Length: 364
Ligand code: NAP
Ligand code: FE
Image (cartoon, rainbow, N blue to C red):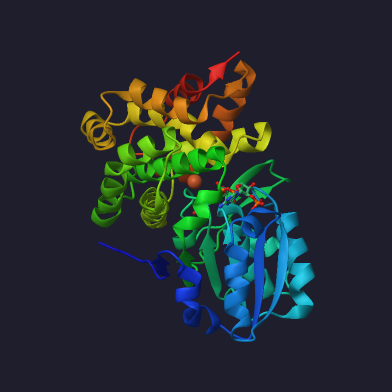
């Protein structure tokens, strides 16, 4: 049995103001890493800068983090912040700025190294600067995971960097979610669902990771209900954010499996948002699990069978169309992803992988 969650995590209304003493203790200079717009609209950036101002902490805001951040985006942020020499990095936003903040914190602690450090853990290097996360979406769980997922244009896909960087502190305020567009709430909630399913049906699952998934999956019907109606209250937003964070704690122990591995092609080549891309493959992944696991997952989620689960996901986020050639190409690329194949507790020969991909997508 092993459990490792080194992030101090708070989740409540006015979280940043309530815990500003925990935030400011990381030093006198902070780099804030965020996306282009949303943190200015939902109040999260102001909450953080107010907390820093109250202690006269100097800060620099880098607000050019793109969705699915690339290595180039990370290195641009590092170039912009190098001379400022921050003591710590605060990521504010969805999974993209949070993941970016971890890679930027690593590169800022190693300004003599090139971007190759982002793919080579064996290179001698310093530990990343401390990272603080303020999540504003409800899916990735990045606020409590050690993962930083980047787009690698040279490999034409996305993958995790090999370094594990847990945030030191995460401050979640569910009210930020009330500003998110419907599509962002739905896509990111489906990402959290993916984390639960892929962590539960996983060779690395443990009693504690399964417990987190069981709790999260048993919350799904309530979450689904509040996603399909657009009538939501504070408690709904709190459940959405907590479920995402539970899902992050679960995948911190198991990592994700085939649906995440498969999703990266749809995001890179078709621009499909991360959660929706993951969601496409979940029902077929569950269908391949052994009978006991399949019925546990379906009963926790409240569905009679895999088709019902698939329809529910399509209702939330829609479908994705690909060509037969793409199915073949994604199948052979996935067969090279030894890590995702090893995490899958059922036979994953090329026919099984091809079947999951082709049955999950609408093939034109
Ligand atoms: P995201 O890419 O961070 O954000 C999606 C969009 O939502 C952006 O346009 C963003 O605007 C906007 N947005 C964010 N919060 C908002 C709010 N409260 N109100 C209004 N708009 C808001 O989306 P995400 O799905 O959270 O993150 C996806 C990334 O996380 C992917 O790269 C994925 O691979 C990664 N991921 C990481 C982990 C992990 O363990 N680290 C796990 C799963 C996925 P702005 O750009 O203006 O901010
Ligand atoms: Fe994910």
